[in-house]
Length: 496
Image 1: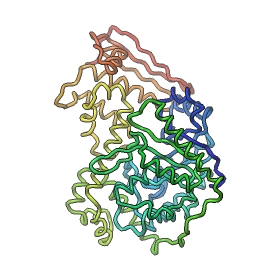
Image 2: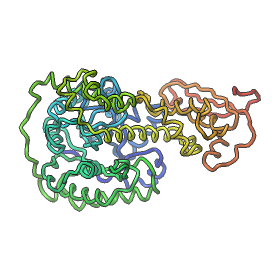
Image 3: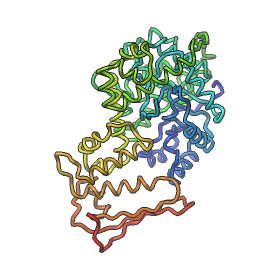
Image 4: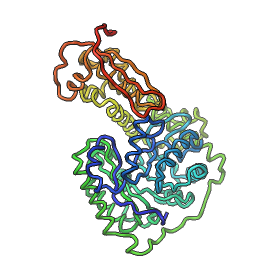
């Protein structure tokens, strides 16, 4: 990874600030895109990707590869990722050092791996498979450890170092995650600073978090804290950082504030130019070790992740596990020794993880139906939260949004009555979600109020006025690059 180009100060791309981004092109060196957002994308979404690629260097960042899963990689996911990388030809791409699936359950969130040799073996096997299809260098990112899996054979610094040594991957060093783990788990970063694999750093992530129930959450909804900036500066002084990306997903500030953070990161990297300092000394190498019984260890890891995926996403199973942990573990085929080890898992951290997963799904649904979310306010979350008791589906935010619309169509069931026009607004937004799929589209929807009046009501509280029947059309012909959308006033009654 020493030959990786110097990209400079970058920003995690979010569609909400696309216009301001292009107004300030000279102040952003590169963009990081969420790879998954461009899988099975509509022509409009792919056109957005091509527009970004024409003006900025792009690096893809994956969410659901699940490189730590002993069940192996999802071949369909790998193929979609490979096609995206071939389209934009990035200098590198990145993924999280975690697992996101277990026992056929998609968690929909990043779950930390146990710090074991079996987990290292699983990552190494998956990276070998990935490299047969994708030749572009891979970076692995350290994640926040909300739930520490019992039975660790080493600490995080050694685990990460061994994984990067074994796989030859570079490190996407998330300094906000490093700081959050240190605070939440009582780790002294200063005492063990030289044990981290700084010679493997290629890119840095930085972001702001917030405190919730006594824990620092990697929420990406605040300005970067002074403590994280101090750690960033220390890392830049020690590591060959080629690019730094600001992550901001929620509570977006004026764009100028994002630009100021990007410039601060760029200034730190300039002040600690790795080439000017000379060669970066390597961290001490570890002896290459594998699990003593690899087949048994792989099976145990797979069953552990299957149990954890169920506990994280399934409320009844979670209650059953903490009432009878050994029995639940044995039901998943774990050995009595493994079951006894998992007994030590912290119930509060599991509850915190499950809550973070729900909050992430709520946030994604709000982004999917932004006008409906604004019109409903806090009622949006109250209506959708009861629908999130089961594991997320492959459609994720689209399916969760559809669940909310279905509940609104049933009357909501909430103590507060819903505005009668909210059904039309939700169905209008959901039609755009349905039209965002690739290929030909033909959607017809009838509304009792003009959707543009509903949008104004959602944004400013304006009166929607009297009912006036409207027909909405969404059309994309086969092979077309644009979606055609029109609203027509009609004289026929809409279905009530």
